[in-house]
Image 1 (spheres, helix red, strand yellow):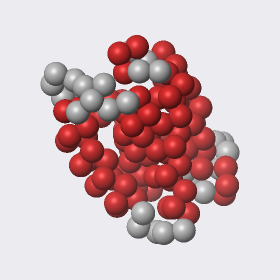
Image 2 (cartoon, rainbow, N blue to C red):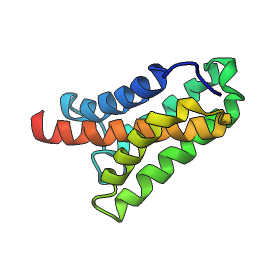
Image 3 (cartoon, rainbow, N blue to C red):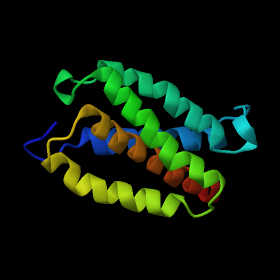
Length: 135
């Protein structure tokens, strides 16, 4: 998929969804903590929400390929955080770099999906930091 101009929805929606899910665990009492970690439940919510990409615009490509790309991107961005404490920094920087140029080139749906997955987990990390320090 190649866009004529930089699209707003693939950058804003995944990161806002991740941000909102990370903040919900601090705002709403009684949200279960999966894996005994604050970001475990929001990550599971992102995985479930990725199924909504089945209804993504057809010009992006195959919806199952897009969903697979999102889930792979989210796993690559999330699982190393369990081992490397500062993994969120390269993930956020890489996603910002990707957002600057992905729209210029014609990438397959799987590649667009990994970009969306990185954006969702970047929003999750930023929302987790915000929720921890401000909520």
